[in-house]
Length: 73
Image (cartoon, rainbow, N blue to C red; front, top):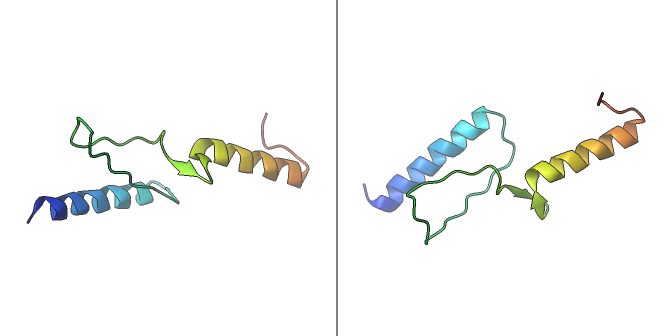
């Protein structure tokens, strides 16, 4: 098995693991200049041009406003 095939298999295993933990959307970014062989970061996830955590927060806030009652506090 060549290195590219091994890398693709490893990525697919990781993505399957994320799906099992409830991830709905993921991105894979390759950094040809990375010093480490593999690095996983949840901070870099982007959705609609913003960090995913910010997008989820905005959608949650919008839902609260639209429903008329906040689910916070």
